[in-house]
Image (cartoon, rainbow, N blue to C red):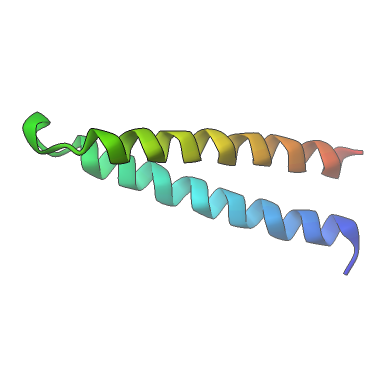
Length: 64
């Protein structure tokens, strides 16, 4: 498999992971405030930030 093909495959996976975590955060935020699990929200927000960094890195590699 060529490098570009590998990068595109990884990029698709990162986009899927990003969407899943954003849905989890939205679902948790839709709960009443006293039922929200802030620890999970914080963890998922960190994961979202990492996904976005990985997406940016992969897009840079594809544009070379």
